[in-house]
Length: 105
Image (cartoon, rainbow, N blue to C red; front, side):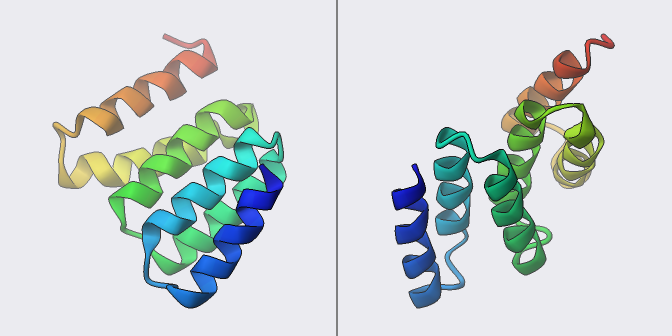
């Protein structure tokens, strides 16, 4: 929820190198049905950790749920993971979710 996201902001200020806090903030905003806020948090996380698997994965999953405008960006994030680790099960599952969301499988 939004209160949790606000607490994550405080935690991020205290520990800005902790990528898990960014992922949790994205999830809290998404579950509060604030997709715009979740995407903003994702952009903040990607700016700070552009190659971090956990951030890319969370962003990809968020994109798979955020609607058609986001599917391509989500796939690009997942592609970064798969380029480094083609057998990453979570990334493969996320890619499947993105493909299923497009309805083009």
